[in-house]
Length: 477
Ligand code: NAI
Image (tube, rainbow, N blue to C red; front, side):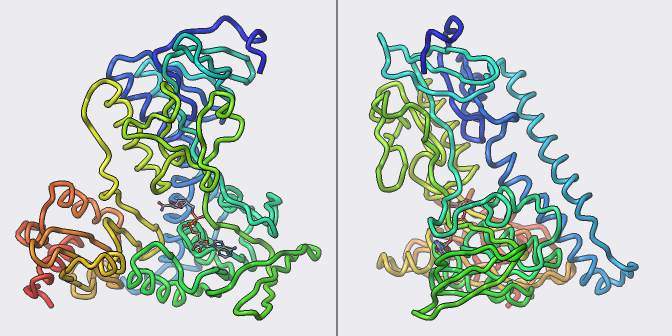
C-alpha cells in the first residue's frame, strides 16, 4: 500500500478494523467511554458474518422452516386443520433478507448515534507505529488514511476449505451460499456434523431435501456433552436426516447437474450422489491482507489465531485483537464480550470476560444449549460431581406445547453443590440457558436454582426440577 496515494490522514483515539459483533460493540462501548473512533468495514453493510451471512439469516430460515414443518405435521395435533401446505421459498428468502436488512440498518443507526466514523473499505496496517502512531490505509471507493495510537483487529473468521473438495460457490458451498439456494436441493450432502451442518441441514430437510451428514469422527458435535449429542442425533434421524459417521470425504466430481462425492469409511470407499454439497468443517481466523507481518504482529502458524494478553493486546503494543481472531469459541456473543471488556480495560475499568460461563446454543429443533464443561470433561478431571436430570415430558408447559422431547441435565460439585455445568436438549433451550449462566456467574449452587421460585407453568421449571434432582428431591419425577 502506498500511503501517499491516500488523502490526508485523519487522527482518531482508536481504529477498529472489522464491523462485526466484536468490532461494532467495542466501538459503541469505547464511544460511551469518550473515545473518538473509526470503524473500518469492507462489506457493504455492518454486522459482520453474524448479521449478514451467519447467525441471523440462518435463524430466520430456521424459524421459517420450523413454522413450515409445524404446519405440515404438528398443527393438526393441536386441533388446527389447514389446507394443503405449500412452500413459497422465494417469500421465505425475501423475509430472511428483510430481517437481515432491518438489523444491519440498526447497527448503522447505532454508529451514527454514538458518533462513530464508519469507513467503507478494506483496512490494512501500514507497518509499525511511528512515534507511537499507527497508520491504517482504507482501500475502497475512496482511498483514505487513518491514524491512531491504538488499533483493534476484529476481522472474524472464514469457512475452512477441504483441499479435496474446494468451494465452487454453486455446487460445493459454504454456509453463505447454503442460506440462499434458489430451490430446495434434491439431495444435500453436508460435510461436517457440527453447528453449521446440523442447523442448515435441518433447514433444508424441513423444506423437503434429502439430507445426508458425513462426519469424520464417530459422533456428531465432538465438543458437546456426549449424552446431549446422542439425544440430538437420534432426534434428527427421526426427522429424516441420515448420518454417516466415521466417514472422511476424499473428493468430488461434477456429472452434469449431479455431484459425486467420494468418501472413506473404515477403509471402505463410499459414494454419495447429490446436487449440493455444504462443507461445514469449521472456521479459520481471517488475517489475510491485514498487514500483520509488516506491523510485526505474531500469528500462531498452526491455528491461525492471534495471541493476546489479558488486555487483548498482541505482541505489538498498541495493536489489539478480539473475537474469532483470538483463542476461544467462535461465537458472536463471546466476541461482543471481548469487545466490551477491551474498551473498558483501555479506560482503566477492571472488567474481564468469564470464558467458563460463555453459553453455546445449537438452533436445531429441539435446541441444544450448554454452559460449562461436558460431563466427560468433569469426569476426566477427577472432580467428584452430582447429576440431576429432568425430562421435558414431565414438564406441564412442554406437554401443553406438545414439545416434550428432551431433558435438562445439571452437574454440581459433589461436596460444595457449586453449579459446574448445565446442558439442555429441548424446546427453547436457547432462552432457558441464561438462568444457569447467571447462577454460575454468581458462583451459585444447584440448590440456589432449586430454591428459586419459577413461574408455573413454564419450561424453566424443568431447570429447577433438574437442580432439585441433583439431591434426589425433584418434585415431579
Ligand atoms: P464445527 O467445528 O462446529 O463442526 C465441524 C465438524 O466437521 C466437526 O464435527 C468435525 O469433526 C467435522 N469434520 C472436520 N473435517 C471433516 C472432514 N474432512 N469430513 C467430515 N467431517 C469433518 O464447525 P462448523 O459447523 O463449520 O461451524 C464453525 C463455527 O461457527 C463453529 O465453531 C461455531 O462456533 C460457529 N457457529 C456457531 C453457531 C451457533 O452458535 N449456533 C451456528 C453456526 C456456527
